[in-house]
Length: 156
Ligand SMILES: [Zn+2]
Image (cartoon, rainbow, N blue to C red; front, side, top):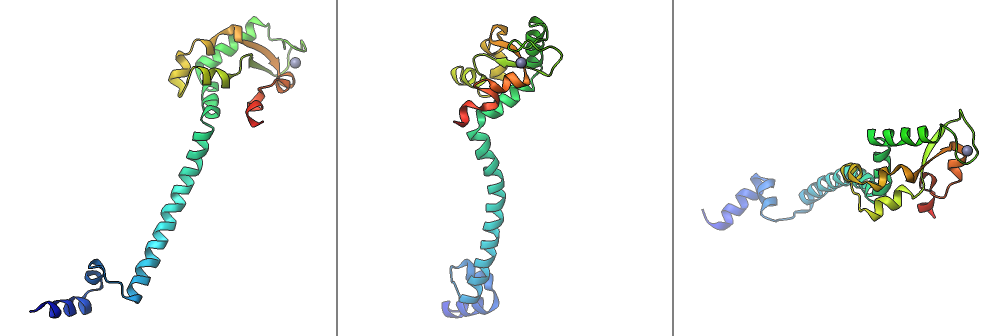
């Protein structure tokens, strides 16, 4: 069998072989293209879904860490210490028996930034974060008025 015969044989017998060999006959390549395009879209979609949230996570990493810190037991302890010390009273309007929130006088965001906190382990080890002197009891309404309430400051 000479080369030409082999070529003809493969071309007629198997699309895959010729495709593999780098030939791009219109019909087949379109099929392949369509397929790969679909695949690409699929991959892109799943990637978009991921990178979308990843990108958000990344960009708002500090915000996520804040949320993370809020869910720590240590945070609950800290909050309890602040509330107890402040007699469960809003330190601004002096209301008692309302929904109270602990306020970080020096904002969490700044503490996270200054201490280069990346994850909850870093956060747990960070003394400044758990300094009760940096916490104050506020009612929800007063808390809303603070500069760094719910990330107000970094939306500016
Ligand atoms: Zn208040």
